[in-house]
Image 1 (spheres, rainbow, N blue to C red):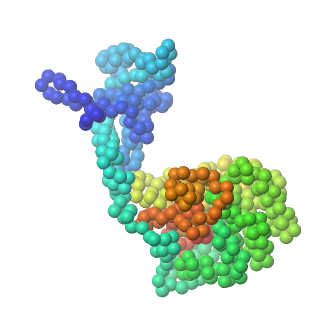
Image 2 (cartoon, one colour; image 1 turned 90 degrees about the horizontal axis):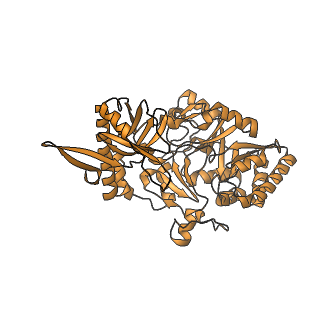
Image 3 (cartoon, rainbow, N blue to C red; image 1 turned 135 degrees about the horizontal axis):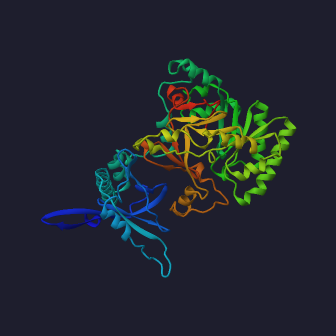
Length: 481
C-alpha cells in the first residue's frame, strides 16, 4: 500500500494494518450518536476522529463509506467499540492532542473496532481510493472518467469545425419537411398537450434583434427555422404566441433601449405577447434598469397591455415588488437552480433526487406568490426526468445552461488567448456573434457568450420529452436556438 499502510509482526505471521489519513469528507463521513464528526485516520482496527470540545462516552458510531461503483453510501453501525476491557482502557487512556500553545484547538480520539462488516468496508474503500489516486496521477481526466464510469474518452478527440456544423449534426433531418401533424410519433394525450401549450420564441442576441426588426414576421420565421435546421419541427408550422426579448445569462446581450421599444412596437402591431428577459443585476446597473422598467411600465399603460419580466436576481424582484400590476415577474433560470450537465448520462447512481428542487416545496411557492407575486417558473429540458410543480411552468429547449460567468470566458480568450484571465466586460464588442467554444461532439454542448450550454435533442413532438416531464405538464414551450 506504500504510503497508505504500515506492517508489523505478531509471532511468525505478518499482519498488515492499513492507516489512511485525511480521506476526503465526501468519501468517508461519521456520526457519534447524532453529532457529526471528522474522521482523520482510518484503519482496519479502528479510526481516529477530532472534536473541538471534550467528548462524553458515546453509545454508538455510524460510519458512512462511499461506494464509487454504486455512487452511494454504505453505512456501518458500531455499537461494541467500548464493550471490551481493551476498548474501555483505550477510551479511558485517550489524551487530547494539544495543537495550539496554551489552548486546545481541537481534541483527537482513537476508537478500536472489531466488526467484520467494518473491516470489509475499510478494505473496499481503501482499494477504491488507492485506485482513484493512481489513475489521477498517471492519466488525464478522460482516462480517469473512463475507468470509473465508462466515459468514452476516445471520443473526446472528435470535434466539429464550427457551431454551424454542430447544429446541423444535432438537428438536421434529411428528407423531412415542416410537419404540423405529428400524430405518427405522439400519442393522443401528448398531441393534445402540445397543441394546447403556448408557443414562445426567444430573441436573445443582437443579430436576432436586428433580423426581427428588418423582416416581416413570416420571412423572419422561415429564415430562423432554416438557419437552425429545424424546418421539420412541429413549431416551424406555428406562429409564436409570444416572444421573449433579452438574455437570461449575459447583461451585455440585452437590446438597447431604442431597439427594445422598436421590437415591442412591432410585436404589439403583430398581436404577439411579450416577455422581457433580464440576467443578473450588477450594482452599477440598478439605476439604469430601474429607469428602463419605468419606461416599460409607461409603454404598457399607453398600449393597455401587460408584460412579463423574467427575473434572475433578487434585486430585480425587489424593484418590481408592489410597483405595478402591468409588469408581471417570472422566476428565471438562474434563480430556479438544479443540477444540469450533459455528462450526467455517463455517471453511475440514481438520478431520482435530481427530479425535484426547491420549487417542489409548497411553502416556497406560496412565499414567492405572496411576497413577490411570482406565479410562473422557467425550466429547461435537460435530458433527464423532472417533476414540475403545480402552477404555471415554461419549458425552454433545446439548449439548457450549465455554467454562467459574469466575467466572460469568450471575451478573455479572444482578447488574451487565455480563458482564465476573465474580467468584467464594460464595452462588449460582441465576439459571441462570430465565435463559440466547441467541445467534443458526443457531449452535445457548446460555449456561447458567457455561458456553457448542453443540448437536449429531444424535440417536443416526441413522446420521450413528455415522458421526462413528471407532475404538472408545461403550459408554455419556449424555443431558444
